[in-house]
Image (cartoon, rainbow, N blue to C red; front, side, top):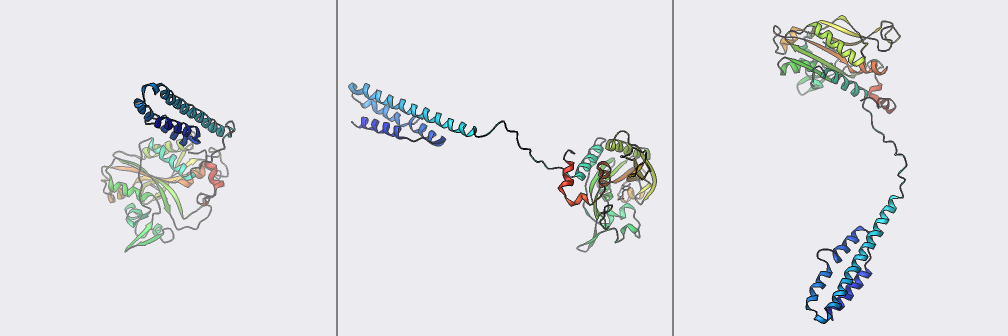
Length: 343
Ligand code: DAH
């Protein structure tokens, strides 16, 4: 009889099925135990089997089902043993290998710290282009036309179409851009790279980094400038840090000053780093010259402001005692690795 033969065939098929791996196991499950499995057709056929044979045939189909289930369970168990067998090849108690993480560049570390210190007292960050025109780098900042700083010695000039442009020599150019574009009150710092045509040595480089600060509002005084810089020095170099202002000259500020911080190495007692003066120079600053305010479209009768500019390499040198500027751009990993713990 057809049905009996079919049962025998499927029985042989099941017995002979080789189940290796997860995929074959799933294929077997679908064929013999899934919602549209082959045995379901046999059960349907059972209806047309003569009554006296129904019991016998029904049992045969049930036996097939049991056979398929047993075969499936057996294969599934073998399968999972095999994969846990794989796992046992690994020594899970072995300490993990150390993962080498990169380090931030020391100049980025210091720049981020400066930004953070000033952002705590409400300064935003603004940036400007490294290729600048004469107006933003010099003229608007009150440099007279014959000022020696425009000299070829200091500035890299480049030709851009018909225009003579320059690589900015300081981030003070960003002051001008901010004042031209915004209404006071203005409170911003501008970090960035600057360029000067200097021979490369331990103490000078043709490019370095600055952070410019600018504060414009009604009633801004020199006392505000001093207090802001004292706050900065203490945040950057520690609570014991003191500052000292010396009169100086910049075309864009009046009055102008240079700021020293008490020596980070001897705390002001005198050592060879501060040349026994107890102080180290860290930045230039002053009250924004009214000529600069007017050149940038700000009413100098209504508004006043202060500005300052510091070298990032200089701050990093004092914080990390790096004495050669060239180290910052040589990318020697033995140098860079030492800043791993810094953020
Ligand atoms: N631009 C100056 C320089 O590169 C630094 C500076 C001095 C910036 C005084 C200022 C400032 O904003 O007020 O040497």
